[in-house]
Structures are given as C-alpha cells and as structure tokens.
Image 1: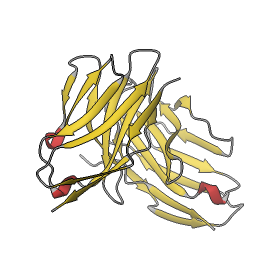
Image 2 (image 1 turned 120 degrees about the vertical axis):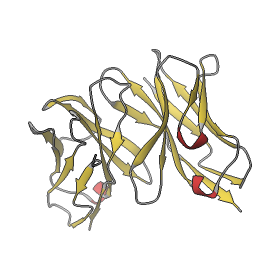
Image 3 (image 1 turned 90 degrees about the vertical axis):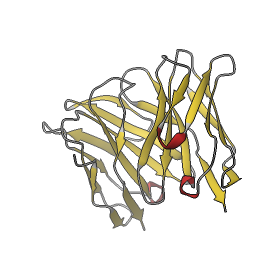
Image 4 (image 1 turned 180 degrees about the horizontal axis):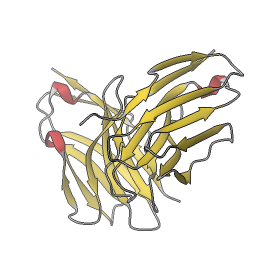
Length: 114
Length: 113
C-alpha cells in the first residue's frame, strides 16, 4: 500500500506570494493533519481534517488555510508569504478520528521563502 | 494546557550501550503519549504509543517506553544502541478528540562506533 505522498517536495517562493501544498493520504484513511517544522519552533500543529471538515486548528494566522476533498486528499494554502514561513510542512494521515489512531507521515514539502 | 518536555537536545551513546531519551508531560486529563523517530529528509515514523493500557509499551526496532503517572514521565529506552538508531526522536502528547498533537522539541541521538 502506498504511503502518504506530498507534492511538491521542494518549493522556492518570494515574500508576498502564495503557495499551495498537496497531500494524498494512504488509501482508505479519512483523517489528514498538517504540521509545520522549523529549527526554532520545532513541530507545530496547523490543522486537522476528517471527512472534509476541519476538526482542530493550531495557533497560526489566517494566512494559513486548508481543505480536504471528498477523496480525502488535502491541500494547504499560505497567502502573503513571509520569510518566517520557510519550513518543512508535514502531512499525516490516519484511518479514523480517534486520538489513539496511528498517524502516518509523509516526507514533507520543504518551502523556502526568499 | 498539555505540554511535553524532552530533556537534552542532544544525546550521544556508544554502539551497544543503553539508550535513554527523557520525556516529561503535563496534562490535565489522562494523556495519550507517543514517540516518533525522524531520519534526515524524511517524515516522522511512529515508534510506540501509550493509550492507557499497559504502562510498559514495546515498539519497533527494540525500543520501549514506560508510562509513570507519578513522575509524569514517558522515557524511551533501548538496551543496545545500533548505528542505525542515529536520528531525531520526538515525544508527543495527543489532546482531546482528533489529532491536535503537541510535540516536544526533539532529541538528536548520536551513536559512536
């Protein structure tokens, strides 16, 4: 069974631009979560979707948004990029919606903002 | 509010020696606790998880962790380190419904030959 895939793997943008990252969960998984990983702040939770509904949201500004489609694929969008948005963005999927369900992580998208 | 503290941002051990990575948590409700490993340029992989069943949890690659409520700890151990264990390890706590997972700052494990 294929794992979680994230596209693109690497991305370079300039300040003020917007970006869309994509995540395809493991087949059959209905929950998708997004995390931002930076050397300074570590791993921080962005948001989580289950069956196209956002169930949880982290403490990020409104420039960060996401959505989930009926096939469970998810996208996150960052508008008006800032230098501090440079990070590894990780997506994780799980079968159900329980906190104890195992999350499977993708390899991440490394975003560099110049 | 829930939080996780990992003691030591870097730990170095010799091959064959005991691995001990420390994690303390803070939670107002019974927590679900996890250990993940991250190799360079890869995502996170679950090593083990505590879900209020047995307090001693066995994971993959010979790792285990013990939940100690009195000490609010969930330390990760492995009896004998291998070179392939060199990676970054994250302790995490899951809060409420869904996956608002709070991660510790991570501990980078170095294994010396």
